[in-house]
Length: 286
Image (cartoon, rainbow, N blue to C red; front, side):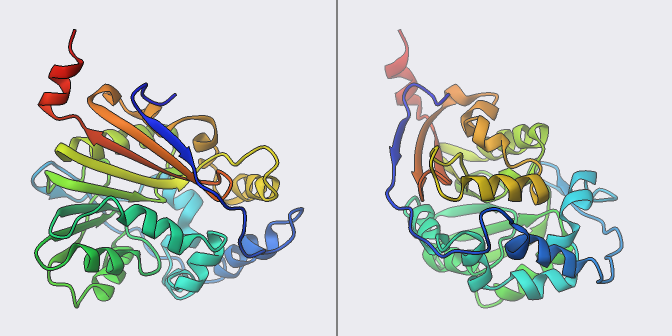
């Protein structure tokens, strides 16, 4: 459950484009994965589990990533297919722009920001533009291929850096705002806990972590059966976010206030965890 001090509001809307048949998710999602199977595999690449101040690079990618997401993130062909706003928007049923706007409402220009994991589409460049040259953007990802691609996209933003690091040990903090945009649903539950705790540890008092990800849709949502089938086929860890609140993975959830909004009939959520100020803690003490 959410922290008792949190609020929850449901945003409107069940409109969006239609992809494939509700009874068969393969035309919309599975065909892409099948097409990628014929491409050449990447070798195992050194990637980062960062220490708090001096990021280190472990020898190999996590097994869950190689076993479940090679088709999406570990092949150069994946960049050509998925790194397009139109594709990202289609995967998110036309809600990509709306979810970006909801995320960026939590940001002020000039802030020091961490983005945990690279994102296909223009999320990072848009974020860098909102922060502006007076702020700083630190983007991390565990996959060197994704880091190189994001560096290319952000070349015109000198206040943004992209580096190899694990979101479970990001380093480089503290930050005023941390973004976790559609990462949690790809992590096994134990990794979810490690990543959420690490990102919460990154923010200063008054700072916040903004999670945007999947959420259990309303009971009669027309896409619920389809998305369940897609998750069963392609996203084996995503349904944990249907069963549990993001705050329930946090070891020290009481140190934060939690606020949640849902979108597109509950299929997506934004959860904002704001670290309590010392004055807040004093007021809440008996």
